[in-house]
Image 1 (tube, rainbow, N blue to C red):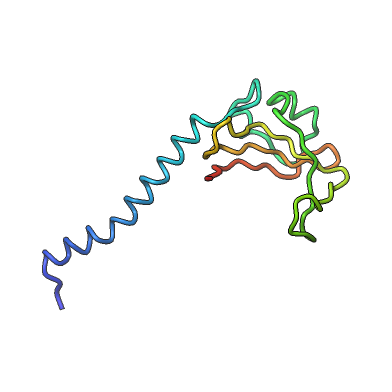
Image 2: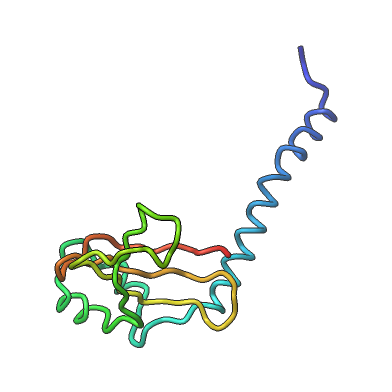
Length: 128
């Protein structure tokens, strides 16, 4: 059975609406994050992109500089309450970005370190 051309037109328009809305929402989040992310001094997107798991702390500092913040890696698997979380020995998170004073979207740039070596690199858009 052949679909009439007018029905096909409406079907195409109807199916494209969710795609257009998704692209619009994502672009708004992305643009807002551009203005609400604070980076560590000397941070560069391309230098951060070149980091790999296994690098030592010294190699990371030589490539991208000092992090904006260093926090202990917390283990909260056994509890619902943040105050009951336990710091994991030998594990810290090096943050190369943070949210500015506003409470909105921002770009996360974080390194998970274990025993002074990079084990995971996190680079994502945080949507609040």
